[in-house]
Image (cartoon, rainbow, N blue to C red):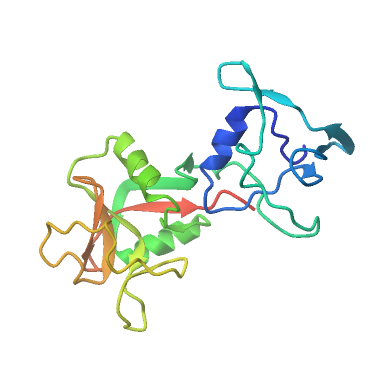
Amino acid sequence: MDLLMILSLIFVGVLSFHQSRSVMLGQTGFPIPEHMSWQFGGHTRSFPRSIRDSGGRSSSLNNEHLKDLKDCSCEFTKWIINECPSGYKQRAGSCFYIHVQGSLSWEDARDYCRAFNGDLATPPNWRLFSAYIKGTRLLRNTAFWIGLRRPSDGSDGFQWNNGTMLERNSTLWDTEIPNYNKKTCVVIRTSNYKIVSTDCENELFLICQHNGFH
């Protein structure tokens, strides 16, 4: 096993889903692609001038495909691609587990996710995340806890479990619901895949997330 070599445009598509992550590849030599080589199994392999697309056709791997590659020290610690843990599914740039076998309060839901080395969902790409939830064909008008709530210090706004604040005028809110942002903890509703706040003590289904990388 070794770090990834990009031999197909399929890999480029896969990497595009991990928009919020930096992924270490088995590539050395910059600028791109004039003096580029791949390190694999202790051997050096020249940079392939053409690679396969999803239809098996030869295609040139150019700067547009690799525009997001950045040079860094070889000692710099970054993420490598890994499979999702058991029970999780790799979707929308991360690993998710939808729990519908029982209902829990927000705090208990977070403890449940942590017991499986995860946390309540803080999706890196909401468009892909909501499309994933929609594709599961869950019951309509069902609410699921996610990793978003008012800060514990009582300050204004809503904070994701990863520490980032939700934009004040976020379009994720279901503004058709009265007092949609007046409560403390937040759910995603499958009626329209928007979010709404509710009481943290309500017992609901939940969505766990594991970053799927290490």
